Image (cartoon, rainbow, N blue to C red):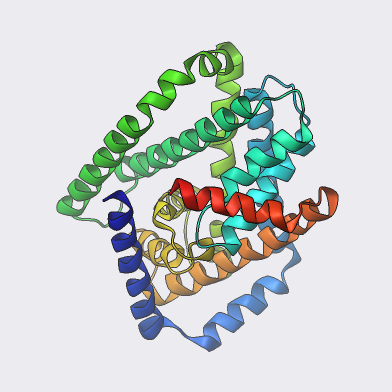
Length: 306
């Protein structure tokens, strides 16, 4: 039932993207904005440095969660492998790549600890994204009528309930590790770094939208990013192609960006994230090569899990 619902939503988003492509694709505008960004070193530096710092913050958060008993490089390689696989495959095998890299490079970390850290931090990512999305609905002056907000609120509440009951037994089993990890200032740093990382990631959207001559505040960009990334729970295409763009067009439209401009910005933003995933994924592959068989194993594990 869960898989069927996910596929139905994903197909709906893909259909919406195809309709948007028919209505709003302007090859001339798209190429002109790509050229404008490519010939603006300051914009590129802002986008890629902010996106890199976002992953660095997540790497530090993961290291802290494991009690500083692992190398930061291991955390970064795991995150980069995860990002690359999630952009190449229609299923999210990235989390299993993170677990695999951690187990392979850090003999002092058990498989149980690696699995726990990745799943808990992933759930925390999702919770923070939904919290930021909800905060945006509450405090941003969005041109959405009351019924839309009510439906979004209901959907968010249902998702929270589903996640809670789905992972309740997991939380009970992993409670001792989680209590230790989130105790005191360490827990505050983990949550703070994760929150900060998602704010930094919004710089990609902010830079692309401003480069295209549209007006948006950084707070609005954070909300757009949270809605867009949270929507990738319905991913069934490599990197969430189509669902990413469709969700982002809606979010930008809610912030007053014209549909044709929002479409162009969404395509370029996703393209830049693909480029980044290939760059850092290539670095991870060169620094810590993984066999094709192991990559296939991670993919099969994700397939079996879903």
